[in-house]
Image (cartoon, rainbow, N blue to C red):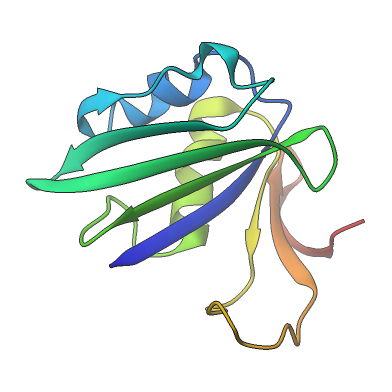
Length: 125
């Protein structure tokens, strides 16, 4: 099982389902109320079930965390996913700068930040 995790600034209702619907089949995601509570959903990619978790107010109230979990996903890395999200959503997207795994110490506190200025590594403040 692989997972991808990105953070989306100032997410508007239904933006996620519009973007993910272009990449996943059979998308079930009610993101109309994403600003108020965690949202779970599913989709399929290459015949594999994709679990979708959306957590508003991550890293402060302006960011929404999106986690996709599946055997196969449309993107290979968090950064690939972030690039796709930036193109579709046109709002700041952040993701981890490395291949950190659950349980490992956090050695690097820099994140990829994608916005109108381009792609940059930045410390999350």
